[in-house]
Amino acid sequence: MVVMHSTNFYPAWWLPGPHAQTLWSVLCRRRPRLHLQRQQLELPDGDFLDLDWLPGGQGPIVLILHGLEGSSASHYARGLLAAIAQRGWRALVMHFRGCGGQPNRLARGYCAADTADVAQLVNWLRQREPDTALAAVGYSLGGNVLLKWLGESKTDNPLRAAVAISVPFLLETTARRLNQGFSRLYQAYLLHALKRSYRNKFQNRPNPPVPLDELTTLRDFLGFDDRITAPLHGFANVHDYYAQASCRPYLQHIHVPTLILHALDDPFMLPAVVPDASELAPCVRIELYPHGGHVGFVAGRWPWRAEYWLERRIPEFLATRWCESGALPINTAALNSPP
View 1 (cartoon, helix red, strand yellow):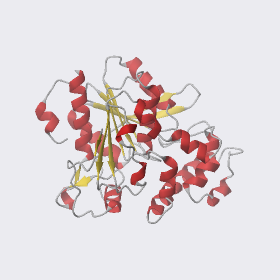
View 2 (cartoon, one colour):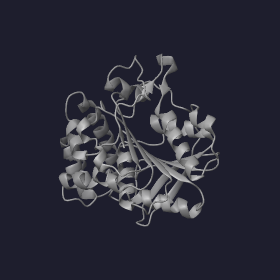
View 3 (cartoon, rainbow, N blue to C red):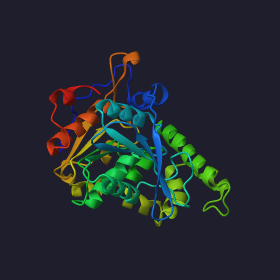
View 4 (cartoon, one colour):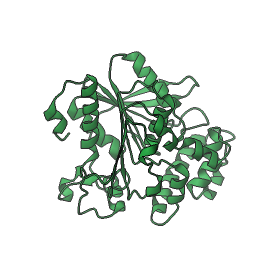
């Protein structure tokens, strides 16, 4: 189901345009202070994942997948964790390999195509707590990974619900969009972060896959992914990587109730990347909004009373799905109240 121009979100009048919506939370929001507990999960290939748990709470668990070079410190992760804490649920942030503050062990890192780590973590959670309801929320690249995994696993998936926000459904189109106009600033920022992570990882290791002095020649995502991401993760080239990693072809195979939230003015991509209803499984709902930017969706009458709408909509959806499945007692007041 595709819901066009839904009226549930009203963008703040004082944040006109997609860039203001995108940048406000990054630059201006005071992030909630949370004490998270770190856990390291060993992987079968000898690498590891850093997990940050929200302590306390009870009942269902929400798994959060961050975006490119994000972490549990990212504004969207902190905001959702705070909203989940107010609901009394549990949550954890899975850091993609190398994003938890220390380089991962193997030469490979993470990429938009790699769903095996999410599957490994969810399987571990299932074994640890077989009767606990699970849901997952993915932002941007994390949303792409989540949707791709849901489509790959089809009916063999233990999640009760999933939410994906600002997803780059077609990666090559997104990469080309980020090389145009003002969006090149986002590309420059993210490329700088990727190169910094690469240097930190390989500066004291012999024979890095790509010599460190070559990083300055990689000026866009197409170049970086062709020279580094694709070969490190077993793809023939950047075009092969983008084709296999893009989640859009997998949406019709999803069997978990899933909500996708997307703004048509997202400066990371073009509206043409958004799938139409014929490409969706019956259990997938896309809510499209004219405005909202990339992982923005900021509302509120005044800057000092900004409202972060995603932190209302996501828990609302999860609570509804969990109530329907019997994982939570039905509480109409809680479903309609802000986090």
